[in-house]
Image (cartoon, rainbow, N blue to C red; front, side, top):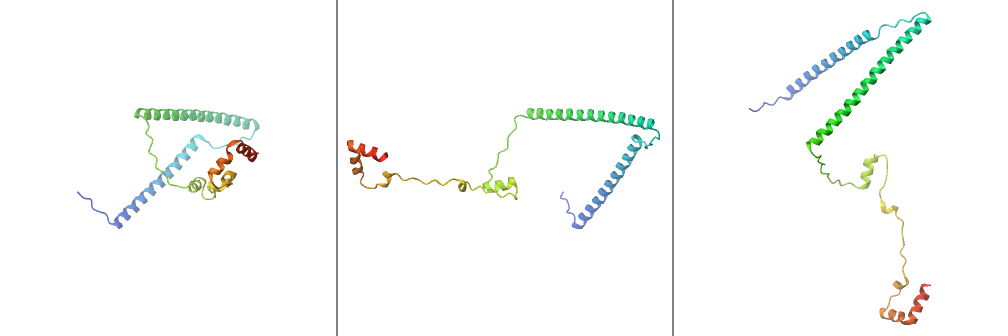
Length: 175
């Protein structure tokens, strides 16, 4: 059975009703939390009466220090319990993952991005970094050797180097 489509005005009306109900619920929760807070404060924090004598004031300070110590001990115990339970949860998660089998790594997609675009994405748009690697390289000029300069008949150069005279010429030109 096909569902009938709602008209736009009906949909907007229902949405506004839901928002009104949600707003009323949030206000009620806020009032309830405030009442709970006031009730807790009345139970645990009686009205402060400042004693007139020094001995009574010291006794009040001792009493407050004892209460602070008790609260700190409870807080410490709760922190230990929370850390222990968090560690236990992590261990159980690892065990579940191990029981499921090996974790399959997702296939990575190739991202076509230039080095400049990657640096801009990593460092943010405020950093202007150029990855023109060729600009940072030193310019090296190629030296042209004497043999390459001499263009001519190769038979002639071979004959000149042949024999003792040729060897002597080779050593003289190199030195």
